[in-house]
Length: 53
Image 1 (tube, rainbow, N blue to C red):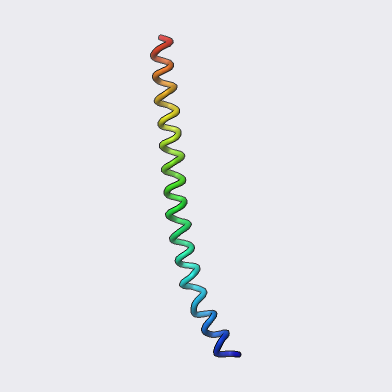
Image 2: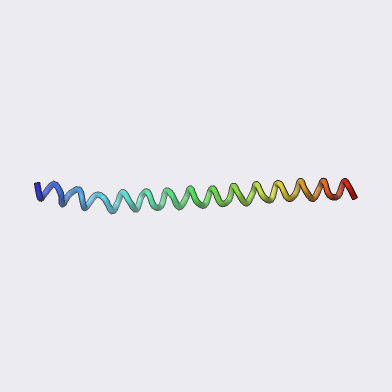
């Protein structure tokens, strides 16, 4: 039983590291999406503002 517990403990950190890097990639993608959306909205707002003036 002790040997099995040790093996499980050894495997856990690698899985956590994998999840952490995967979540980091998702965070970067989400930040990029938000930035592109805000840029797109602001560009449309500028075009509308130019049309009104």
